[in-house]
Amino acid sequence: MAVLGSAALLTAEVNAGIEVFKLLEPEIQKGFISLFHLFHHKQTQLAAAQHVAPAANVKSNMQNQDAASTRTTDVKVIKPMQDLSSTSTDPEMPFTS
Image (cartoon, rainbow, N blue to C red; front, top):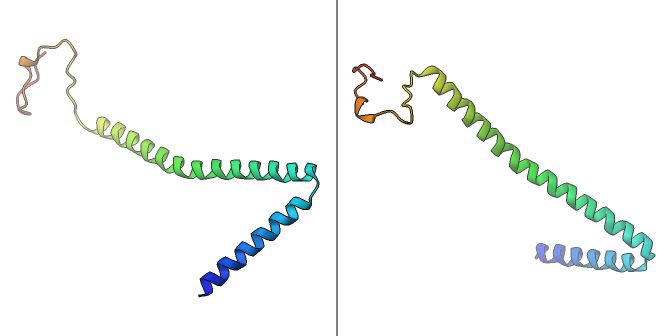
């Protein structure tokens, strides 16, 4: 029941705010609308940045891990035009080029 009272109070406050806004001069109304758009745009940028920053950090961390793993392991690179019949999956067999 308290929620309904709170919702009714909020509705009344919003309606009162709209009525006061209508009483303002058109130039002042335009100023408030411009401020609202500016504030809303800034909030959208901040929200987007909060979602993009963790994704960028994850991508950066993955790239760093990939770079670290290639530095610490002995990887045999197969050249694009190399004959694959000369390669073996047996790690004990020497690599022939």
